[in-house]
Image 1 (spheres, helix red, strand yellow):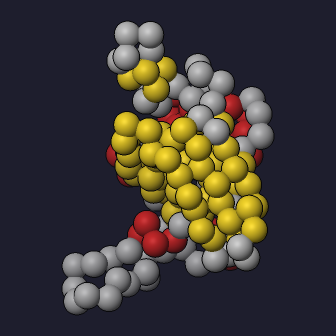
Image 2 (cartoon, rainbow, N blue to C red):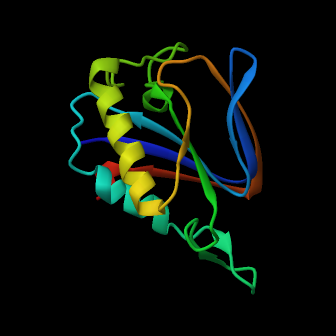
Amino acid sequence: MYVRLLIQRVTQASLNIDNKTHTQIGNGLLVLVGFRNGDDAGLLPKMAAKLMQLRVFPDEAGKMNLSVKDIGGEILLASQFTLWAETSRGNRPSFIQAAKPEEAIPLYEQFIDHCTVQLGKEIKTGIFGADMQIQLTNDGPVTIWIDSDTY
């Protein structure tokens, strides 16, 4: 299974669809998730646990030592097939590695479910396949990339 997460620590983020605010969060994580061809649900619980336990928020000493759960933060999760862009040839990215919607949608929905259970509260989400605009204030800035193939 191959899941890619791009995680940004934010003080706020909002996701618009059709020029309307679809959802928004305050302090927490903006997470973009992409699935590659051949994915299955096997590592989704582990990836969700890693996300919930990732210590990227400052403690009282200013050291990144707290997780989104520790601070009672929120998560905004959006699908993004372009995380699997192949750019080694030419100037136009290829997305052939990205899972097709019929494969990726169930994985996306299951990942949302795993994250919701592990965070213990609602995960805000985009709509799979929608044209979304995301505004955020990246805190730090802190941006982290996680690939499931490192597990």
